[in-house]
Image (cartoon, rainbow, N blue to C red; front, top):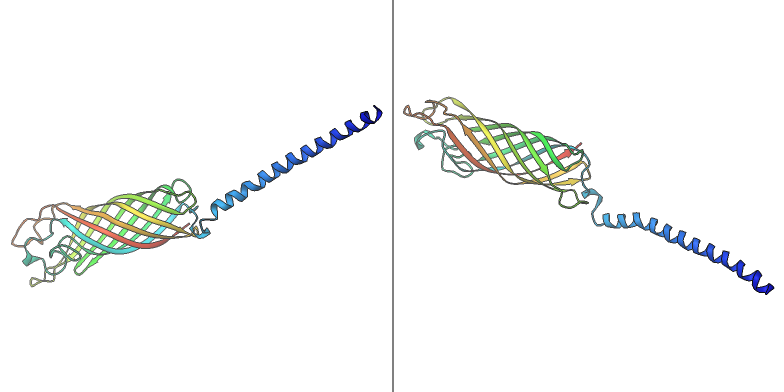
Length: 243
């Protein structure tokens, strides 16, 4: 009885200490595995393609603007000259041109996703035609994959358009300026690069100029020029910087 009474109580503390050590070891392994699992989840996306954390962006782009419809500034082919009011397409009567874009925007979220408000500038060139747009622009950057800096960006802008057109035909008429409203809407695909650079592709973007009646000048034979409407599709490529 004496042997039994002295050995059994001594074994129990050892078993308790062992249980505690095993429990602490399991807890330590769980805590150590948590950051490892997070790192493994992020390991599939290169660091350069991680989501952007900077809210402001400056974008610069260029590309073709294809005329698809609308009314002419001039009546009759005898008064169109070359370029702006021919027969549609790149250099046709609907204002096809080469286009530049500059945009500055800032996100309300504090990073590169969510709603953003900015200012849009465009310059358009085609022979005797020069165009200029300035407008406030609203964008919503949608991030489809949480750990990837890829954004689907629908947007809309509404502002001012100026057309400067000089007719170089036989009459050698002076240059004319036309003032209009400009409406643009479409979708852009953006990719964040190293949380500083941006590459983007703007899918065919609708671009409408809606102007008042410019009067009798520029229409030929005293014809009255009505209100005009020009519809275009713009495709843009470019890049930018986030800050």
